Image 1 (spheres, helix red, strand yellow):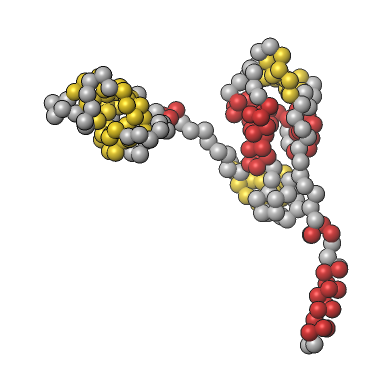
Image 2: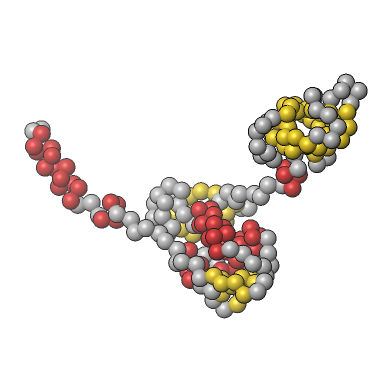
Length: 210
């Protein structure tokens, strides 16, 4: 086949492609209309958002109440949270919801719906046909927040000295052993090793990260 003939066929094929394949309307949610009155936060255009997402208002509401850690109620087209919450915080949680429950991970389109198979919820894309289980991000467990790990930098007050002359302090429910320190010293310590509830560390100039 001549090269010119091939290029002509290619151009002709491209011209027959539907515009939807080359261009997608960008998915954007309505700008959140949120005000604070005293100790409550009012999400005035909540239903406008759920309409755009094509999701049950109660589903999004229960997600937000859990993620924001506050009680609240649906009142008409608005939601009233019983706490002062910033617009940016609510916006962040709605974006997380959209990524989890709405956007297709294959084609990036919002044209989806949720089906249930046995005990698993499946996100089904009406645009490309993709199916994926909905994986809900779990909040960190409380005990995880109270766990010390090697490499953590913490601030410790040395309130005792062990038999070997090493400084001893407390952090949460850990006993911290720090060589080269004296009683009454308050210093940043980098954890090097942990055995049960006893941690060993060394003095560091690094900033606290735990």
